[in-house]
Image 1 (cartoon, one colour):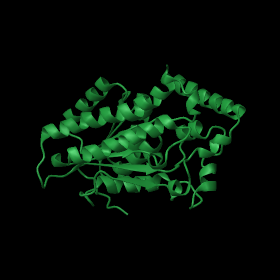
Image 2: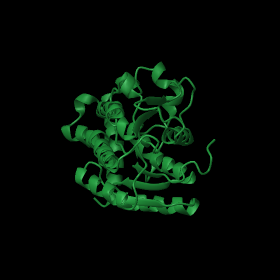
Image 3: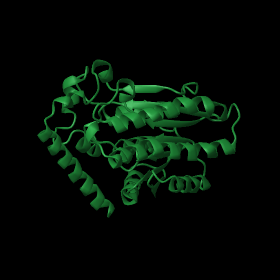
Length: 296
């Protein structure tokens, strides 16, 4: 679909780029000629991903270990990246989520999502954007782009995932607001709301104990889940210069799912207390495993 040299000269930061959807997009951009920076809380995972991608494709991938909830750490990382050459594009992909009845959420549980998704995304976007603005831009220069991963729930609500729905809605508002504020600086901002594309981390926290994608396949108008390659192709177009006048937009890529249903997790209203207890146990087990891998 795309010319092999489409992204020659680009330098793209992908947050949460060590695994899952972020890794897939980073690999796609690298294969098209971009230099890539990826970051995540587990630096060793990002470093391993960088080695594997560079062994598979020509090009450069640099890994950073950073918790995007820490504004100072984010700014230091972005400063280091720019010292080696300015970014041309940013993909805000890092996120967190889990299912829970909203009345059962603790402040800590709410903040665990909001601090990553809303605060962290803003910290990265601002750190990159202010450096782009300081470097200057004039009509005719290449545009700079920010693409953020949101969710279809910003359109129809997210029962049982309210912290994520609220935080992703904030990212959509940031996208629209900065598209108008920063357009004069040659900066475009757009967002993509993918439907279910099964990944290990997402599936174990949003579909604990279930076959990944089973509920989506049963309810989706197309009868299937999405694929990483479909997201990669859409992200590539949005970061390309194929339509530089496109900004402040959200594209929902979910096979029409959000148009056909009242919310991805609405059916969980029928779960019993025992089912919720089992789900919480599975989610906590995955959280413990993740903490052990980080050495926490």
